[in-house]
Image 1 (cartoon, one colour):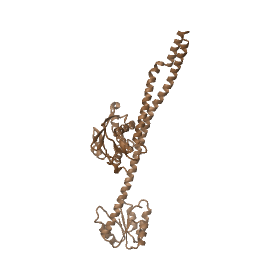
Image 2 (cartoon, one colour; image 1 turned 90 degrees about the vertical axis):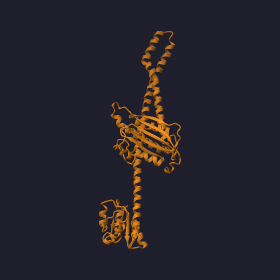
Image 3 (cartoon, rainbow, N blue to C red; image 1 turned 90 degrees about the horizontal axis):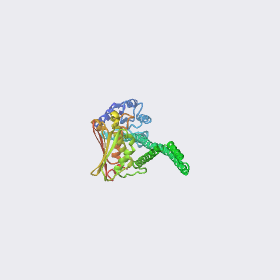
Image 4 (tube, rainbow, N blue to C red; image 1 turned 135 degrees about the horizontal axis):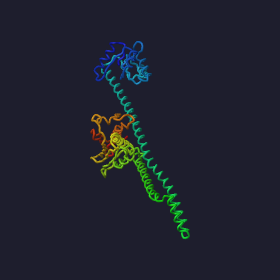
Length: 413
């Protein structure tokens, strides 16, 4: 916006700026009109005369810097004064730049262009920070959901370990009592054989020995299985998180994928069976384990959510399938995560990796998981991610990770 009480002066400035591409120019005849017009839209730059009747350029500048919603608006002052003291006064008041009259049109255009470029960079920085903050918030949401699932997965085996341990304790009390009775009766076996045997039979019936003999081994086996499941979950969490590691290091991608599936079990176990087709003998990839696990978890959870609605609609709730495969392709390892869900329309497939684009309503799944995975795979792991999908058939997420240590190094620091 050009602000000047002189119609001729405004015309000179507007004429000089007309040759600039993608610049629309409005005008105001004084500071008060400029304030009114500023409230009407989103302005990128104010070119303002210093001397004007009423609210002059310096007064307008000070008001803008005191107004929270407008204190970052770039202001270029047009002035006929050129002393160093005067220039310092303008800059101290918050002017971004100034130009002395008379001026060359090209000089004005260059100064305006510079201010617009600086503003554009500032807006990009703000947008990037907002994007990172939102993505971080979505990561925390993902981790919160997974943490709840992991807690459930650990709690379930621990529960039946506890129940079975109590059963074993109670059963052993009965068995030990029966054995003690056997020992007592053996001492008097010669003198009262028939009576002792009857008493032993009664104690066996009270102890329900046949039931204990049948069920105690089962309880012990279940408890051992539960403990192994807890051990697997904890081991998977340690592999994926690898606490304390700030630098990328070699990762066995096949074991990493198995651990990912273990940690996310609560997300898929009710709706799908997970199948592996992992190429043996693959070389390691160099990556941050925490970042890579975040991306793979999001992809796996996204696949589980994709098939969940279909499973709910099937008679008997027949589960879907999620297929995970790995294969070396040149200097990269390709990971494919496929589901037999509903697939996506082409317009959705093209946008599904965009930040903040979601196909699910708030509160119904992660929605933004693939966008987070894309940022992680591309920016943190130096890899690539693509989406293949066909409506009515399913969706495949294809991740390529480089084998060379320096392939994604520029992204890691």
